Length: 162
Image (cartoon, rainbow, N blue to C red; front, side, top):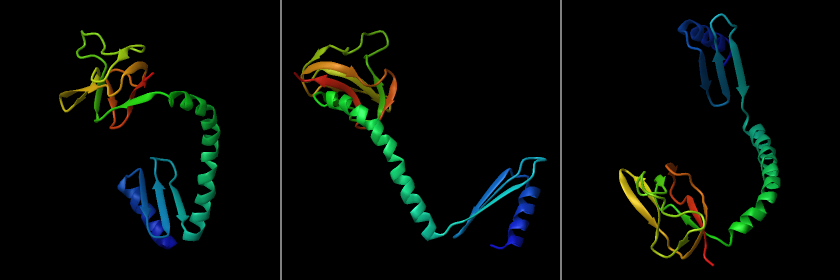
């Protein structure tokens, strides 16, 4: 793309009334932003395959370095939870701790549960699916707020099997 084509593109965008236009081609990216009486801004970035790869490589290891330092303090918390069994959602839906708004919650922190006890319900497409305990033990932590959306395999409860 030569300079005349870019100038024609700027004029076209200015006349069209668009506030921003981006155009990407093989090795050129052009972004034109206009704002009423403000001056037009044109950004041209030429991408070269060799230059892009080395720039991306140092950036990737630099980002995980702080994450690793943050994970070190979190590691003891993870090891504390490792002795507990995690009850996960078998479906996508909305998590409810009680069968209806006027009823008490199925389980509280500290409640003893046995295999087959209902822990919560997950509503999916207007169907309320009871989530039953697969282990016996004591509820240590509720990991999801009531009436919150949950994903498949998302942790819901921590159970101490001892």
